[in-house]
Image (cartoon, rainbow, N blue to C red; front, side):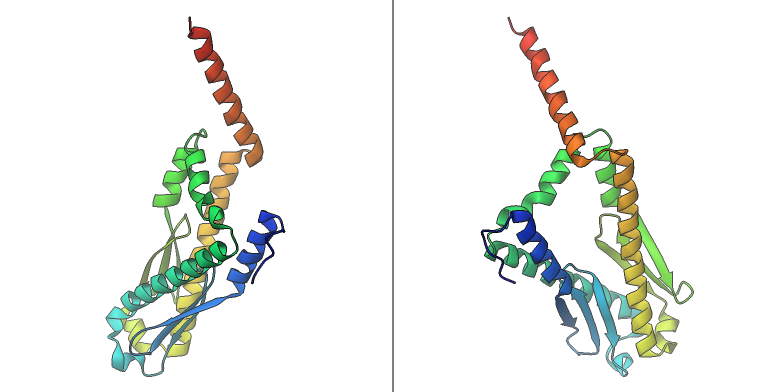
Length: 214
């Protein structure tokens, strides 16, 4: 979607994000028996296995194959969103996340929160624990484990659906955990109030330094 440059940046960015959420990026393995689809925001939409997939892929390698495809699809989605931002003149928005992370490092408790985002994992199971999907709390896909015997025995359509559901559930759990961490950090304050506190601290520090000057 081409958004007019005379519109506010937030509105233009929201429109691009809405377009990304509605988009679909599909990746298949080279034998065309495994297919994954993700939205433009990287959220898993479908995992499809051809009826004859076991003839082309060893069951014990199914999770490995899927991990590679999911990461490729996520990269395509990220590249597409990056290009859309640049075309809309919103290249500066691509650095917002890094800027926010740098700012959080100076907020009390912010460094600990960032460490948890980058290291803490959440997992969700399906098929009685025979399918386990894991995401970092930051939202990055981390791992997928599929029991080999179940991969051999399960009906392909059902197996693909259960894999998708496990991935979506794990991603949702990561979102929920991020919300918990953010709420604990904010402690009822808005981000604007936190930034204002940091500015006030900086000013007080500058005043202290100025007082020490001869």
